[in-house]
Image (cartoon, helix red, strand yellow):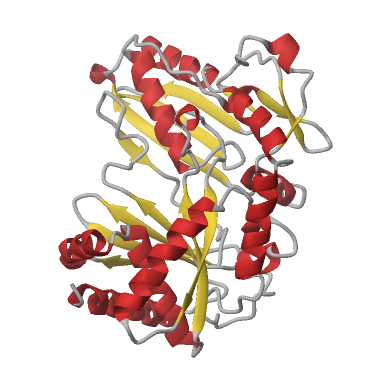
Length: 383
């Protein structure tokens, strides 16, 4: 197996970027400051050993090859030696202290990994801090595997199935108030909707029809797109972490896939639920081909509503073995998508609508969110 220590051999290998990393890389060629995220962790001094903390972060990052990867002028990645694993081209971890706290500032670019990656890293920081062994990250092995898999008949079959299923879609988002070619994507707006009263009915519906909560939300959103746009079909994407194989479970990388889903209008709610279940299952089965990120399909799917589900205790820092406060810079966030809908399951069930303020008015998004909730209420009453 490839290892992080085998720098001399691995550095000679050049690998294509993973699909979502390639998307970010391409955007960086136009604007270098895209997809950067900053978190500030404030940890009480009495709850942490500062030197152990520093060492734990370094050990955890060294365990994941992506933090030691470089990208050449052609956009190919390769393993490279690093003087300081805590500071790289696409990440930095810095430490400071005041009278009461250790302050850790973490800055990452999305090119490195997805939300599941953050959880994996937090777990490794915890294990390193507690002196436990870290599990192998098979990132380099996965890159080798994908090089061969892209030439396989299965990969080609998945591509053809996706093209046949989705090439002619039209409605992939509620009609914006401003044209898509509006150039100002500088500000993201957020609308929060509490679904706590629907949580138990949604889980009963999920069990009764063998569909996930993500599928239920996707169905309610697709129904709302049809209502909002006056169409008989609607499509969207939903985020899948893409780590179905055992050896992929501990990989920090952009493994996640935006899987397309297409629904047709039907007055029979059970038929709609069956559609959603079938679409979810078939989407996963064919998801090895990055359909929504390829040209020319990307020109449509880049603007599709995307559903992201964060299950209970999904906060990426919840695994850390000490008290902390999380601070995020109080500044307007850029809108990296037209509309993302995030589902959070913790003490409450919440839907968070992140949308481009340059394209949707606040009242329009509120109207769309009300349609989604009304659809969910209809669906749960069918149990």
